[in-house]
Length: 370
Image 1 (cartoon, helix red, strand yellow):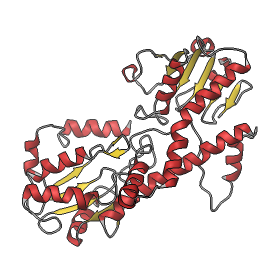
Image 2: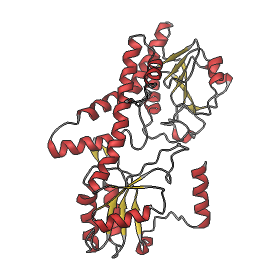
Image 3: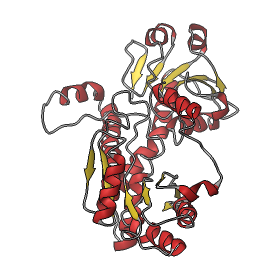
């Protein structure tokens, strides 16, 4: 809500003006490139970075400052963006204009760590560029962290998300083995987390989603493969585990129906949560969407409850419903996929016939955990 209010205020006062008119670039002092950098069949697609560089290069003046924030592989700022800007402008990066890289560190839905109080990594292609970029961000955030080069800053961002990706894959695979061993992974993790050193807790779930986590580690893997012909085995293993978690969730649900001598075809399944993480509306790369497709292919009747997601974001075959006693009771199975704070845990436990909880949140005789 705070971010929405800030945006509304900026729009109302005219301090923020979104536009597709490239001519407004003619008077810029500082330009931040925050375009998407998706993967296309496992290969980084930097066409949006290239397009942004072409536009800015045409309007670049001496003393201007350009900062790339989009997640990418080490070397992009110097090897890709700088030549585009220099060719279009006839100026030299680091001498005639400032150029650098500063990775975004936004965590959607996080009420504690916001843009202004999250340390901001900054870098430049020259000492003067770094000074200019650090000075700019110093007006926006409480603390900047300068590194010696753009490659280090680009790698730092990939390290952050690769660390998360690999550790989430670790606990996801542990959850699968723990289930086979009839061991409670959630209790084991709680116990492990009491160690005050040498351990950081990660929790299993139905898979990973969002703009960056399923994508960023593959940028690093691709770069290593391209430059050295070697595989980044940790990333490839993590990709394999996390990409298959949604299918594992469906398999667990099918097994639950089999134990009751029921087919999943024709059964009513209620999914709690469609967004890729708690308390946000973004469904990009959400494991819930894969699970939905798998259940529909098996012939299940699927409903979804998510207070943050609009119906237009869902498969048209999915009915978006409000979580209530009647909806829960009407379902043959309830699957908790996204642990939104708005969900009424007591209501679900009181009226569900069976629950598959992929987040370790619910407690009840009819609740089965991932």
